[in-house]
Image 1 (cartoon, helix red, strand yellow):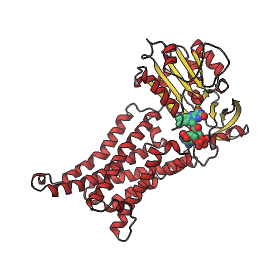
Image 2: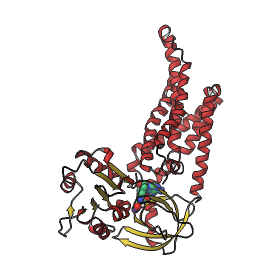
Image 3: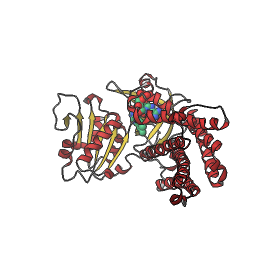
Image 4: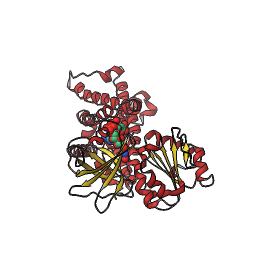
Length: 439
Ligand SMILES: Cc1cc2nc3c(=O)[nH]c(=O)nc-3n(C[C@H](O)[C@H](O)[C@H](O)COP(=O)(O)OP(=O)(O)OC[C@H]3O[C@@H](n4cnc5c(N)ncnc54)[C@H](O)[C@@H]3O)c2cc1C
């Protein structure tokens, strides 16, 4: 398993090393003027501040992009949830700095806000500023679609807009180099800037290589089963190389060598034959074609990634809450570590429950179905309705609720709602582990 124990410290150091040198630019401000000539002081301060903000914003954006690539992060850690949180954190703070830069520049030049969007290339200076304007426009497009419109947009248009982060970064590099008297003046800043450009080019080349199928391993479909109307179970066998994995990890899957890969959690893994079984809910363009594939069809796999359920791989008392296809990381887990486990499996109807009999065998009387639609079957272990605080307290016991570790998997919406319920009954954040199957 790939897990650099101190990966968070390493990333913090890298971010600090690449951002703090830009703070030394404040040495260009003549602070003694603060008392004698306030307006000159503030003008020079705002000028430097605008540049420092631009540089720091660009560096944070750069790290957000680099650490958004699984090719890079898999070298540091398997903790994809932790990396996603960092990705969002860098995006939030990067945005603040990025936006300060053009606003203060417009203020410095005493021009209207429209100047920021006037794509003027009439002279060399304006041409170089225009690279920054294009970068700003691309940035705003990505930011608005990610932070505001994401839940209202389909995944693919959002993804294609998100890819604009690559040309955006290119424009940022050129903009700062063209206008950057500071980069020309201070060798150490130039070294940071060119190191970033080199790393950026290396990541782009690697992403293109992954897109073209380099590094993926061929598997063949050997079995296919439907569960209910929307879920298909696929078993694949390796053609030559066998990829090994641990419980709860996921692979990226493609049907053609060239193209975008989709993540799916391993439901079952046979260490001897290398057979992998995936439980897949048919939601969109990629997943809907899976049920019609003939046995023998080729798959391209890349991975494994992730560490979800690592803390559950023991017989300590735990509570598992799975929503729909969020069952996949738990099937192998409870077969091996099902003792002392309370299991809630939330579905629309019992027909949608994947591997239900196996789960009941593994967990016994502590297995509960939480069924959204009214059903006629009467049993103490079938709860009608939605997951609620009352159900958790009743089953886990009020005295135990705060001591248990909780493992949640399902759609982002499901995970957030369960997390909220757990926190409302006093479960600490540190006791909640989750994986969102989408975002
Ligand atoms: C770590 C992880 C593990 C997953 N495990 C499973 C699993 O075991 N079983 C299962 O049915 N589903 C799983 N998913 C969800 C699965 O990846 C998506 O349902 C699938 O990619 C949808 O593609 P689509 O074209 O059919 O649907 P779309 O309608 O195009 O997408 C539906 C949603 O799936 C997600 N998605 C789509 N494409 C990608 C992509 N290339 N990379 C990342 N997310 C994408 C987005 O959230 C999107 O909104 C997992 C997702 C993640 C992130």
